[in-house]
Length: 156
Length: 156
DNA sequence: TTACATGCAAACCCTTTGCAATCGT
DNA sequence: ACGATTGCAAAGGGTTTGCATGTAA
Image: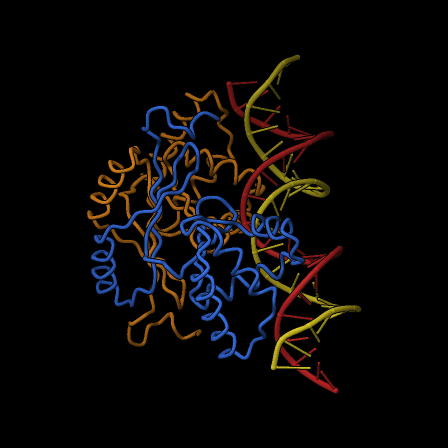
């Protein structure tokens, strides 16, 4: 879960990024990496969650700084931002990121990841047809749970 | 563009829907259909746009009523709601709707529609794998414009 | 030293809600 | 007449912004 080497690697990349940008290497910025990269690699976290969890651990950090830092992490390729149907944005680590898409359960909102190469064929084909260099995509499937005795279903 | 017969058909469907629900057939509700279905069929409009345009035409309608009515239109299958990267929700007619996905230009934000059957294969495959009855999906491609002298590019 | 970054709270923006007035049925 | 629907304005919730204070370089 908390892969020390991975966290160090992320910090190193971030340091280079900040240097190149001429931005400051503040402890708050690195603490956000610590937090995000201490989560399971496929976990999706929102700003409030990061904020509360960091405050609980004794960090003094503000929501504003978390928002700012997450923008930098996205720019530097260390985080990915997702906007599902809900209004909060969710972030996940991107360092070990192989591009994947998401499936959201209509009942429990649990997010699962999948990857299907057919999406790349679609991107190539449509990009060509529209004379557009596709830079990214977002694919989310929503479905009703068909798992018998699904443990997440009990609260519904 | 403004296909009278289509608008009438939409109103008829809406009327049946409202009757079945035991909901009232108010003029405001039908005026929203008029407005949405007077747009080009592939146009995506937000609530503020509908509100201003309707006010300009002399309707007295509130934003709240537009929000309420759009929910009903979505329920009755007469409108589709989209949430792209931006924070406003966009709506489009759904009566002539064949499911399609969207391509958003990174430069001018123009939305174009496409349809690729490969998405259905992905849905079947992943739905099966996750034991989930896929009810809907959202696929958006983002790309950089490669159209020479693109008319929309001038303002950038 | 000096700009850039931080923390806080206020402002923002879209959407939802509460409530008195209105209007379908 | 009754109760659902409306319009308005206020509240909500996530995100952004302004500004005084703090701090990396």
